Image (cartoon, rainbow, N blue to C red; front, side):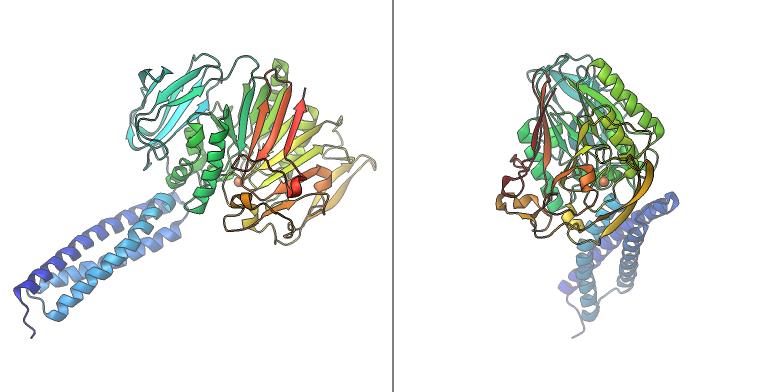
Length: 569
Ligand SMILES: [Fe+2]
């Protein structure tokens, strides 16, 4: 009974072979994981705990199977019991391998540590456009490749008449071709000649340089995409498709494109999103805290991926003209944490003065962090107390930021209630429009608990003009009222990551934050969305509006709060 047949012997040898192969694969995998672990421990990077856990599991399995391999070699002829043992081991190993490889692989790519995406990347992604120093004549085309290679594109004034342009740069995963000396207000064509996660190999793209005279134009503003797997990828995709349908002249993004800018996997997720429109519409970005990344390489990757004409080697801030308007992109992190350097603040003020001196009638300021909010983040008082007086002084037309993942609007006339940040401010009554537009696809504030957080209190010091003295004023912020839901089933899909409602927040119903009146709070809604600036041909009329991803205007409950305004000069 215990003798085995020749057939059993062959079976035993097959299983021995399986175990040997699996052992070798697992050993290689475990050694790789340990190499990464060693690197990250030395470099003091994050996610070490997860990496240790995956590595230990790999090593344990590796040692078990190596032991069994050695044992099976020591027995020339296997008995039935031993044969079944090897069989079972092979099956268990197969199942474990199926689980461990995706988890381990994901860990390596996503959590394995922050890397320079010029040197380490695993997909073909892009392309995307950014304006060069002068939007009327300069355009940069960027993309990422799975394998490091030299950079070349097909480029020309028509799809039938394109020539190869090759960059002299060394092999890299992150590519840029900067085109200069182009004609203003002119359409050009280009092709990468490779398949990316968004486009086929033979895709030909077009773009238009900025005009050098006043022209009608359309800008889309979007914030906080942070696409991840599953629903977050889908939510951002809805917004991206809405932007594609708008066919804008360019797009402003307010930061937090990526979940963490230090990691290739998160760039890959976001690079499946924005190139849908950024391949044809220049993508002008203000950096977000998530783009900076935990250990600093995120900022490095951001600067490398988006070659904007930054004003500083340390701060990611810049500005540009388009027709009658001037756009300023602030980096509100360049002094560390959520703070700005004085160097940048001085630059912003001088930049506004210079733009107005050049005759740029409209000034729009863009950055990431919450200057005002009724969401779950803190208000950035440092930015608020610097920028609100500045915007009032220079009659800035619009200020856009994200960070909190929802839609909100304020119409703030600084000093109108007799409260100033400084006794030396002398406001003249200009009002400025402020929008939090962080609904580009990330989890919404309702997912972070905007309906049920504790009441927050915050003491701020203002100079009371009437009393002629500084006063400490205590403000509080309550959760949003869960009964305030817009009854709009067709727009429900743009609400929370999980099934939820389009909660709204309006000041004339009840105040959830005692500073809402001071800051001129107008309306807020928990929805994915984008915003739009449309300028007329002679630069005298500007319409600003907020939209659901299908293009519908956000109008609030019963159409009472249509989010569209027209300004004239
Ligand atoms: Fe953020």
